Image 1 (spheres, rainbow, N blue to C red):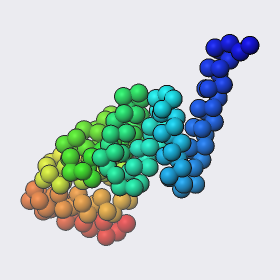
Image 2 (cartoon, rainbow, N blue to C red):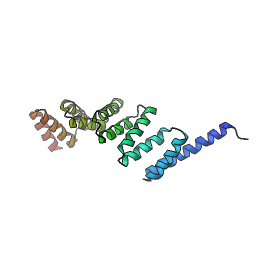
Image 3 (cartoon, rainbow, N blue to C red):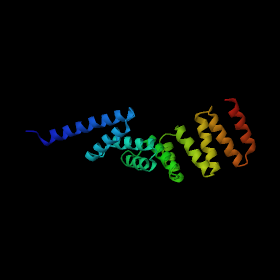
Image 4 (cartoon, helix red, strand yellow):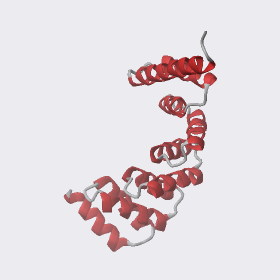
Length: 179
């Protein structure tokens, strides 16, 4: 006779094996099978790995509404996951929800101040909203981390130009030409 503990352990092992399969299918680019695996997992229990895989799949398929919902769902379970805040910000940005995207980028940066990608996306979001002083500060922080990033230099120069800081714009454009 099997105890309830034995059947719980067997079910856990089955879910863990299915989770491994879902990850493997995702890594191999078999998104449909990975999605099916994750949905089966979630019918059994709310595992964060399955939620995150579903978020990534939705993001890759450009279903940003679904991606944002799944990233948010994941963050309810794992609130300090830097990369998920970043990807949620990117999904929200694609949906035109710039204020919320900015908040997510700021969360990622609060967790890791050296996240140059999140700082760059934050600066770009500020620029799209013509929040030039904030954009300038964020671009400068990116350059403090990656001092040879010519693309960021050009964006910073454009932000300087928008705020009529022409001398600063010229200096940064000249610097961009030498990297």
